[in-house]
Image (cartoon, rainbow, N blue to C red):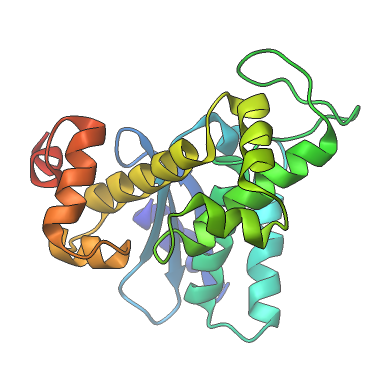
Length: 216
């Protein structure tokens, strides 16, 4: 990917972004190379089916352009665009032209419920390191925890607390796989009070410690 991006860079653009490389099993990676900068930037996400949706590349480009228009540096704009797309296609669900979705239980739900669910996930993506309490998210959505639970159960058959935990686990796994941060640094990054607290959470979910996960 690096060689391909650098070859395109020689054709004249100031920067090149390549999307969707499979550098690592279970992950999809974008690479950004910038003229005059020897070090490429990598942006990695879990390799789930959402990345294959039609229009993802165009939306990624539009998101990057939007962040650039807001004055963000190029690499920051692309990073935020990649995170936006990841939240959109990996963690959310999409309504079809009839405003009805098909979910794990093959039931139909309203477009309003889809909107609530996707907004909930966007908030989890934004605030998970600071707050993991269902009441916090229900308040931001101006609804009761009970109604939020009804929505998430209807769409994916899971309570909000489980969804928050699953999201957090996925992000931790990705960070363990794709970064050189220590386990303690990752613990602080995701709002755990200590490395031990992170290890306890991770082992309860995966059956192994974060350090063991890195070696498997």
